Length: 69
Length: 424
Image 1: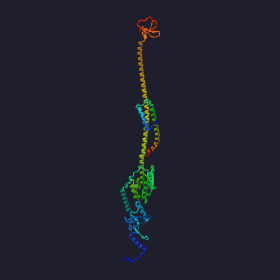
Image 2: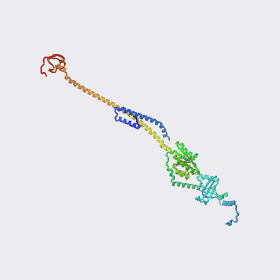
Image 3: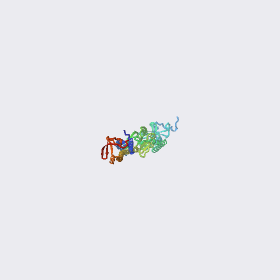
Image 4: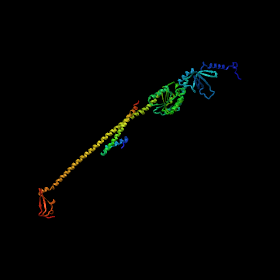
């Protein structure tokens, strides 16, 4: 099952968390939902790490512009 | 033939003698020792070492073939210092200028022409005339709305493509371009070389303005370093003023020194007091744009990027923790539920078991009431036939049958000999 873009993934993750909060998760669903939530979280973290790496590469270049007098 | 009687006795003169006589008379009346001021409008002017002027009465029509013309000339020895003075004051002797010349008459016999040798020119008067003409031009330009025309042209917020009307190698050019180059911004300078002083300058400046207006530059800068009024006179030229007013591109000027203000300055979109200041002005505009649109934007982007990443990191971490806790809570809940169920079942089992035990006890008690051993002990006996069946009534046996009699402590065999009672 594919994972959507950041907002779609976050929405799905929030829904899973909400279902836990509301006690809607049966024991049979527990593993499925936990596995799905883990996939989403890992995907988000991977995207975040990739974005951070790109930002670390670009930020000094933007900073040079930002610090110009 | 009509002859004046008074000349009858005069000898006949040769031509040369006649000119000598005329010259003597002219010398006596208007010669070197009797110089006079003569005012006239310059009809023609020509300079080749010496200055040659054709003066006519002011306002006379050039089509009038009978208008008087004075062929004046100013020898180089007088003309050169005069020329310098006029140049410093920005005065050019050109057709149309009214000038008062001080000098004396001379006669050039080989051509039979009377001339006028100029020894001085009324510079003050000329200056007044120039000032008047300048003011009249300003008034005309104002009335025609041309002083404001170029100021209304929209200016690019980041004027990086700069059209330049200047003379390379001059101080003004270096001062202006130096500011742009040292700024570090990527200015593109589109230069159209022109003279920036002298007779040819106005036409060249107009041509340069036209070319740059077509070149799609962001701004046209007219640059000229300091100089005498004469040096800067081309920037008071009406053609230049009108050309600037007609430009679709904003025209900036940086002409002369602090105190100089040319008509070009008045007509321009923006005027700087020197070429250096003009360069600074252009650089400042770009710097301000850069500050607003690049540097501050970069700062905002950096700040926003950090905030977004921080928020996203926090979000993912929080969701991860939430999931862990949620699952743990869920599992604990299930465990508790199972434990409770198990406990409930155990309790229920005990209860059932107890009830069963009670039931068994009562049954056992009930059964004990029917226990035959108790009856046997009381003296009762159980009679069974040989086949083991219990004898319950007389008809179950016949005379002579062997029966077994069970007592509380054992059995004995017996034979039916007689039956009493009513058989059923």
